[in-house]
Image (cartoon, helix red, strand yellow):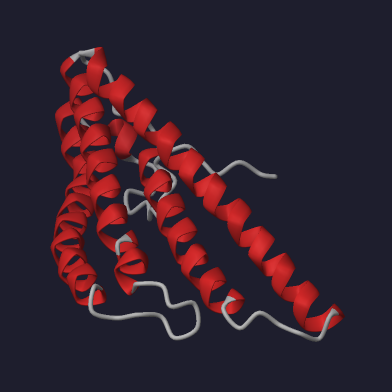
Length: 175
């Protein structure tokens, strides 16, 4: 079944592209804010607020991508002994974080939808932006996280069925 993996790769590409564009906009707005405040001494009143909103979106889109890439926070409670376990036990144990992420994402999606609905009735003070656009980052993050965690779980299951160990969590790259 290559279709889900292809779909996930396309979704990650779109997610990354949107996060990159929003980060670019954030950089431009913060640079503009610094220029107008400290050089021209005539700050744009809306720039700080909009920068916060863009930062919120960028962080949540990036956090969802970290789930897809298995770069989320992990604590190894097995002390490296998981390799000595049976494949079924290893898969069951590796599925626990995915299931926790799925439950959290489902709860956050429901709550985020409610929060976004409330945002329809609110407007940002300085930018006059409808807050539903800002709060929509929460259910978007939750939906992406759910899809990515489910994809990782299914990939691990397919790997287990084929008789191999689940994909290991890669250590963060030193940069």
